[in-house]
Length: 181
Image 1 (cartoon, rainbow, N blue to C red):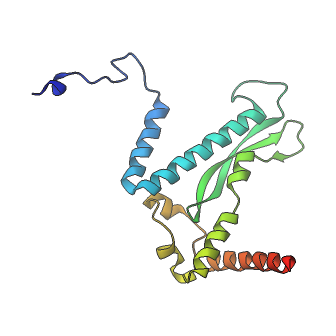
Image 2 (image 1 turned 30 degrees about the vertical axis):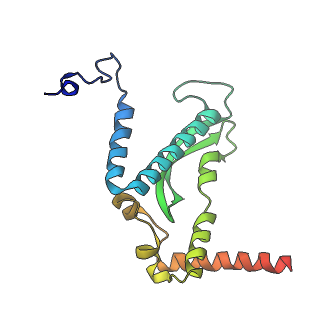
């Protein structure tokens, strides 16, 4: 055996540090994404960042979960399924909900509103259509592979959805062009 093989590896357990369970789960997700490729890893990391930002926004509005705060602006109101654009498609996300503390209605979560803009999808569809890609081939050819799980649950990649986005984007571009004249 070589000297470097004889030395003990320094692990968090040897240092007396406990690895939180949440970190272990996240690392397992990262490892699964790495098997799918670098783009799948980037999209997975982006979705995790978006989730953390939404959690932070809800905590800023409603306070820490399980803690009573009489000065809070909002109260937590569960979660629902949402969709957010990512890598040329709409992917499922967990959307947190908050309501005003005075009972006046639901409040928007700023991070979800920021990430939920479908303008990017329209711009991507327009670029690909102008480059000669047909709506029929948009899904299988026009989108980069981002992992099996994400591809299976994604939406807005059908021929008709891409066509609708292309038409809407060209209408906006035409209106801007005519307004500039």
